[in-house]
Length: 158
Image (tube, rainbow, N blue to C red):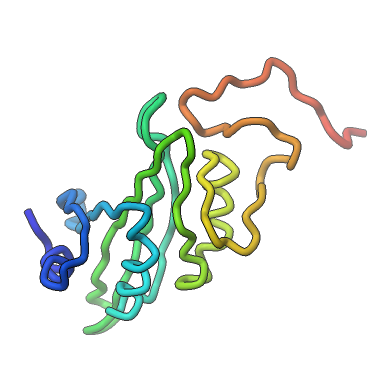
């Protein structure tokens, strides 16, 4: 089933894949990493100027990694927002997705957290570095194939 935004993207020859609707009726679209930045700019101009959240997850052990963006467009009033969920999948071996920091500044810490926990590299992000784990940490803790170290150092313990 195709939603309003998907129909608009088709009309303007913008490549995407409709993933249907979630339990709240929010349209979900899949965008290829190489198309994501240009489509993000188009969505911003189209009125999706509020990034509610960005998160990432590991689809399956050894499988793809996903970066998820929840966007909101308020055109007809605050009580009638239009929402869309965008999923961008990246291969596990070299997970690279264009950063949308320059479109929605609020994605700064969220993309950094996705990098820190899952190892997704957001190209052109101005400060892409670990935000929760120490810089010396090896691995990506939220990947399903992550092996937890059998030791923990208590740093700066008194």
